[in-house]
Image (cartoon, rainbow, N blue to C red; front, top):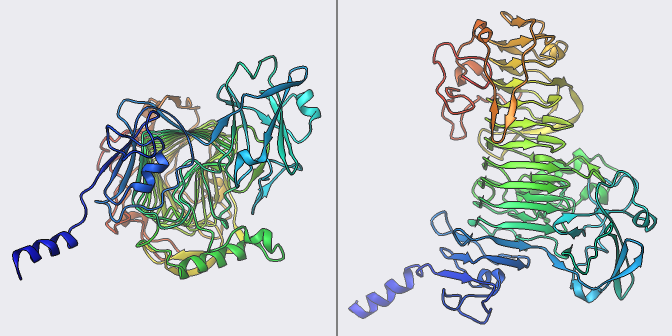
Length: 594
């Protein structure tokens, strides 16, 4: 072959060189996206970017929904969206509303043409979906913000004129006709024409329209104000930012807040079912969800196509459903070093899909080093938590419980955590292993014989069987209890495996626990101090007859028949504490701190 022909063939085979695109509030979408001719919107850069490209956004506020039309094609050739280093980049799903007219007293009215909203009007769209509870009144996906703080929606204009006592801030009400949307808001003495008033107009801030937009990085942004719909596990789960049934995203170092329902979603698509229980309420919701799982498997739900995301170092707050939610789509992911708080703060509606982190099918998911508080329910591992490890997390001030494990069959591992809320653990599962935790609150144990839920082959989404939940078959080693203790498992069908636990005050051990250490004195509750916790282990902890916790010691979960091991299949050993300090290899200290 001639040299020129070889050169042409090489060029055809070689990947295009990666490009750097730039976005600025002073740019123009007709530009080429270079550093000297930046785009005006992130969406324009998204349309241009190809695998391997980097999009850098300069400081400022961008009001748009970023809808990536494509992702990267590998870890090495991902598409990166990043804020310019040292600059504050805000992406909002809201628009400012300035044309307010005084209606009565402190109540003002805005008349907005429906054409303003385009194809989606959050003040016509009501929140609904499987396992959603509206508390007897309608709720829109829209929201009104006064100087950055969200107001309380009410369904009656009378409650705007005279706000109810439970409304801790101002109230708003919306109604629409064929031409306009009308929003009434009580600003309690503020003049909205002189303040910053914004309303949700977009159903997401960063979310692909189609599944399979893989290998995307989103880094360093301040994202807020999304008119998100209820993210049921049987529905497409649209979040303020979401991966939409994709693989290999990295969501890191962002501040994410003010979503009407969920802030971050790692969830499923619409093809496998969308609120199927509401569509056919004649059959139980668990039957519907089992069918959704089968459809997802038929469509390629596997390690090769879905999950393996990283969500780290984000601050997530003011989400009325979940800080991080994911049905099936979070498999093989890592969620760590996030601060999640003020979830379900208003409590105007409720449902069965709420919490700081709420996952279905947390298969081989690692949840590590997160601080979760004031979230209603802290962590909720619902169905198919298998190969899951929950380690080194700090949970407190959660009104429902810190950890709820629901109809999981194991194996899953919970270690080195501080559970400091009034209810530490709600266990409606079996096959869990709990080691070196501090349980300051009570423990609740219940069987669940009514539902048959899946378990899987090792480190896989492939089904191995279905089983109802008898309860028990848990392991509790080297924990500290100052709440109720383990006596609540005395009547479970499957026995516990225990050892090295310490019980302070009125906490009581499992009836068949040999060598339990009981200390009648009360123990001071550890105090959270920012990202750490202030706790001095008393000398009495060393009375416990502890031994190291390893794969060999934990054995195998009864139902699945699988070992407690690392996601890569290697043996595990709990040889470090909450702070990463090495543990005594022969006689580790009970609780999270060595």
